[in-house]
Image (tube, rainbow, N blue to C red; front, top):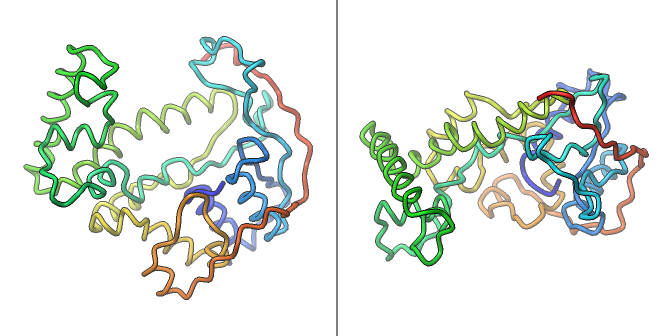
Amino acid sequence: TGGYDSRLVFSALESESAKECSHDNLYYACHGYSELLDKQVAKQICDTFDKTMVNNEGVLRSSERTNLKDTCGMSLDTPPLFRTRHEIIISGGFGETLRSTYSNSILKCDKSEELSLSLIIEKAYGSAIAGNEDNRIVSDDFYERFQSIATNKINDLMSSHLDIYSALDYLYLSIRNRYFVGQISTNYSNVNPRLDPLYSPIGSSYALRMDAESRSKNFLGLELMNMFNPKLLNIPFEGRKIPEDFRVKHDINVLDLNLSASPQVKEFPNLRLVPTAL
């Protein structure tokens, strides 16, 4: 896609050390409608590296939506979906553990703004869950219990000499990511094996030892991408910019988005598969 994580996986596949392996049985897909910038960036990457792209949006049109109860809320139309399990889906899941997510929310705050713990929790989890009564969509009872649990966890982490930024990102790693991407991968693998190569305890540990600003700028992920295949840093990211200090350090020249990119395309039917048991 146009984001960081799937491109980091792609850069590893295109690294010098991976060239000795055969990639003839790999093909590439980007979810979303063809007019999205995300999809255009994906096309430019495949075109630049002469890769075959799957001609599949991987999404359900509203008229095709069915009751998702049988699939635990998952839309199982993402390519490829075979009951034969001959395919393995490689994803950019867990890449956010190499950078900051929750701490980003308070890094962007006005420096003059007093950051109480309740405000920090609201910034991290959103006003719909942790905001004031006018903005919340949860019951008062849920809000009180949530505030209590989040406050206790943050205080426990900070008593272990973590700063507030590392404490928030550790919470994302240990709770949010476990029950978000982790649950998606678990459920998905009931239908088709899925691999998230960016799931790395070493990478997460290293990232948490960096300062908050460096994590926010995704320096670890960008340095890895530069090590694997620096050519990928020349292709624009959708909605994101390479930090200026990183760009100057590695003399990166970001190209314009090529809206006319047209990689090789492989037809792949949008199959509706629902597992018999999850």
